[in-house]
Image (cartoon, rainbow, N blue to C red):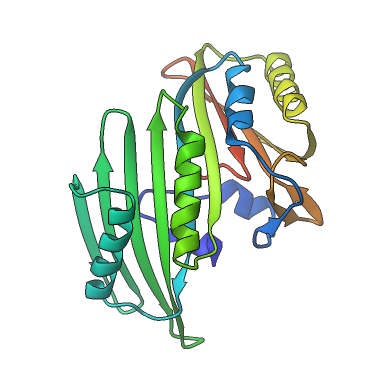
Length: 254
């Protein structure tokens, strides 16, 4: 169901590469605690210019096919918790099997999306309503740990098991050679004490999946633990190489 949520999200969070490569289980818990600053520090040591951090969380709110009116009320409850009162965008969707209520608040330094999504599976005669809170932070990352803790408290207070992805994105001028790219990736993995488990490469994308004990959550794929994802993409038009560093997986389109 985790992948189904992302595939339906209208702001294009879609893990196509991973779906091709792996059969992935639900999130499992590790034994140690991950400090968000570790990921930021590791990225900053990569010599890439930071652009943004994406903090994406989701969880099952209830096991019913909620009405739009119910989702409006639930949305207000969560936006009040986030101390958001004015919205730049409000959107509603409704069909026989899917209902969505989305609000977006954008500012110079951040963009917050709160989405209630209700899905009915007619084949199994089941339904679930999900909460998705997606926050993009631009340039300044000092508030990442605070935001993560705040979202954790909101999910816990509402008895929702939260699933969290953090993706940092940056760029540098020019195209990296294969040797330069591999050196940067190995340095990143070493700094976060991660071992490489899988590598995926195409003409435009180079993506590495690894595991580190410094990160609490992980997924299992082909009987391997994965909780850190590093990827490079070259944009020929801009003549820039983009770096994505995430835990446990990259959840932005790249």
